[in-house]
Length: 524
Ligand code: RAM
Image (cartoon, rainbow, N blue to C red; front, side):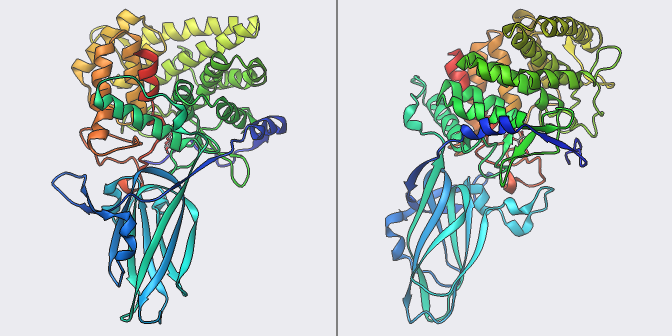
């Protein structure tokens, strides 16, 4: 499945003043020196998740001289994002040949078992964190230039010679993040699973908070707007690093398409470049992130600066509606005009209609706060039309559910977004969610992103018990499989699923999965 909403001829416009404001908020990264906690063995078992057992303390690393074919697996005791240094030497006869070895880094143990040679997915194989290294003269200190996201590290000696062995004297990681977990109080509960879920959520967020809110420090290592929205909410409930949210908002507004459309993601190195990928929902979320930020900080200057960009997203997506006031995408086969979820074959029309309503409500509120009555009135009129159209054309009276597209597809996503957009009230919303859960339609939810929205919809409708149970089932499912940070994709029915054709390139510390840290603090 490839992204189709790409504008290859995109012309970009840059607002230098916004770019300066974004760069003024550049965080200074905090550094922590971390050593591996253990030498471990990773062993296949019946499930698709291998067992990890401790072989020795990592302090005894130099007791394991390595010759051709030898391997060592190190466990850093938790997920790290950082720069790795190795101190190496030799033992035996003089070093009569270069040391030649392979290093591999994995966020979860399963990744260490997956072979990069077998990779056959549609995104770049270069995301696999693996290096082949020659060292001519030992002893040496090897400072790897790349940043890795990992918990496990494998060292495999490809060759020394018959006469000498390589010794690993020390391995260390300088871990980096814009924030420090010491500033966050754990969520108060006696429930051990919930404590673990909260801890993993916070760690996920921390490790994604770098010079921008990255979606995943392993991949794609960049700022995506859909992820930013959830990270910002979780950040308000935990680290409260407002400067980073402000920076990211200014970055999106600093470079847009010529017509003002905000890209789905952007790159900041070597300099700011807005990507040529667009999703209707992602552009619209600019308005909701801006309002959330204002409500949290009361930073009226930023609101004034960026409100026009928020209004523009609504205006542009408004052009995608037909004369019935129904949003029109590109059908269910090439359906990446709007993101919503990775679910294959998901018809996104109803969910997109609801996301539009959700975001236009927020843009309208911004206009009200700023006293822009004309914009607020115009949006109010439009909101009634779009909500009416949702009921007239997307509501199935017989099924008592919202349906999507020409094939009137039933999915979780359509109901969830109609609830979040408050197209229905909490009481009707609760029943809608009960109904869709009982029906369990074929078009399920695969990403923690969509599962977050489902959980938040339950909470908005007062289904607290059910939401808690669901969090323990869904995010708890990852914990039970050994997660200490939450994954980009987790489908309990198919734990090795990947949207990319192979799970070796999946990210296992992924921004949009961190939200239990927010949901627990906001609703419990
Ligand atoms: C993936 C990213 C990101 C998400 C997009 C739509 O490539 O990792 O999290 O926002 O897809």
